[in-house]
Length: 184
Image 1 (cartoon, rainbow, N blue to C red):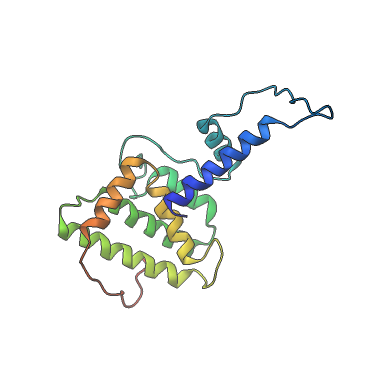
Image 2: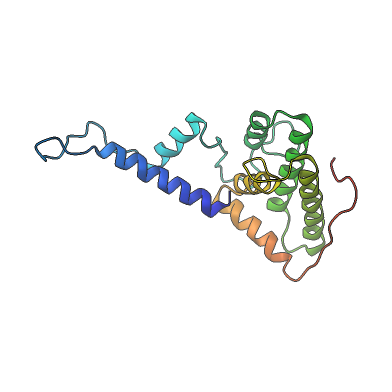
């Protein structure tokens, strides 16, 4: 899910929660009395996170976010992956992709060589995803998994800006698909 799709989904969910909280009319066509005020956007997000509809994500000002085990993946994304993917090979592939995405957010976008190196890691991780996930549609297609990791990695304005700067630094560059086993 891309960032804009996530925001759109979040807005629609908040609107649906707000409309549900407004109530309707009784038989006399008089407005129904609502006992509680509609939830704020923050409350709607918290409700969705607590229900498991969306992952609980770090929203700190830090680009890197917390990574207590030092595996190169933010702890919140680690928890999401470990809870979502039970197959060992698939979990390793998704962690590889998350590590590469984290590098894309953190790389110095003005350093073209570093950005290209990150790009190669992302191509390797994408190739790995395609080798371990079955083809086809659905939430566990390699494309969907990759888009989800991209969305949750760039979940704040500063992280999204850093990721966009990384992508812009690659404008005009070319690459080739990796050959062989690219899984770590």
